[in-house]
Image (tube, rainbow, N blue to C red):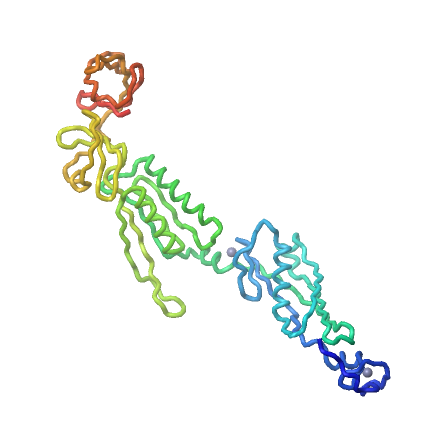
Length: 368
Ligand SMILES: [Zn+2]
Ligand SMILES: [Zn+2]
């Protein structure tokens, strides 16, 4: 704080002899000649996106704010912040605000303007009382879609995700599993407006959708590739130029699901197997003749295996009895008993339990 010298005896402007004086001026005249040097903001524009509720103030978007808080406190806070930012002074000052912002009226078409009154006080000189400045700012509310929502509305997209199966249609369960994965991924981006999918199509031929960003398509493609041991290819396509002249590519991410999925039945080297697991290079099969588990090269199975899932007929059985080597089985569709070899049954099956399986060319097979 500056100490005022008591040089003057009377005010050079009004002539009063009542001090203190500064530069030969009394307090009243000094304040008149040297008001607080503060920029007054007459109007603040606040844009509100009617679709997502995001705010832009003086052209700058407010990136994240807690939407449960309500608009009133957030509009109030951003307007106050904008006003304070403009107050450029070396002095210590206090600010008080008063406004008529009302939650209910913010999104109301009828009322589009509020007012905020700012009162700034500072005490630059010990002997002088507070310097004050008061001004009113009009808050103009504008309903305007934000950039992201406009992009979305105009169908903007950068990526395409395609999921196809190798030489086959997708199974119902398989499709369900894929869709729930896509769902889970999208849940993570619920809060980000720039993460959306468009034109989603899913059927037995596969899944196709457009994605707002390449990142989103790539994230989904990589995740689906890893859970299915599929193969991922990316096609780059020059689409357009952005405003600043850089090339914009629209990428297509294609995940090719393996020819087999777990649970598939196939014939290979003369016996029947059920697919247990598939990785990038290997396929794990369980023999339906002796329950042995074996890993094979995917390429070898692809070339030499015969898919049988669609040509077998499901059947249910009951494990009736066993002498340790052979087993008596009852087919549950005709209640006929017959003998089979115990080692062909799923491991850990107990007498009296049901077994799911299938019949193919008059031979019975047991799955679980
Ligand atoms: Zn004076
Ligand atoms: Zn929006």
